Image (cartoon, rainbow, N blue to C red; front, top):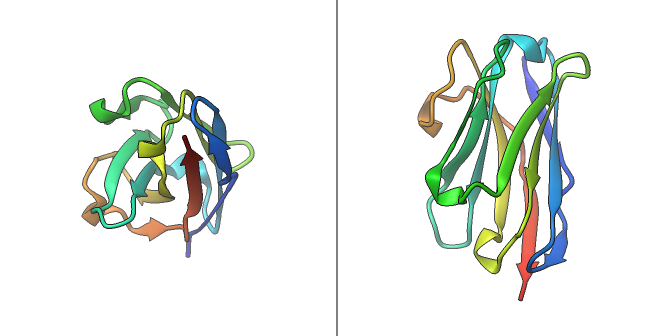
Length: 123
């Protein structure tokens, strides 16, 4: 059973930065595609980015505007999401998700999910 735990959520002012972490247990993270999704109040959950298991190829949702960087440290079984130039529109609960095999941006195809980390951006 894979378990994911997010950390690093916080309340910051617009223009600030945050780095979210996702700790993976129950399986080697190197076997898993890791992704980040987010859900703002009253909105559907949306894909943010994903990073492949071993080649570490990354893809981002265009709407993120090139302000986010996804990375991973397989030796530590962790994934990360670095976010810069944050705006109030980035306020959401951010979820780490994982699946075996290839990465994809469809949330329905992710097997394991964390509980989420709240990110609140004030203007």
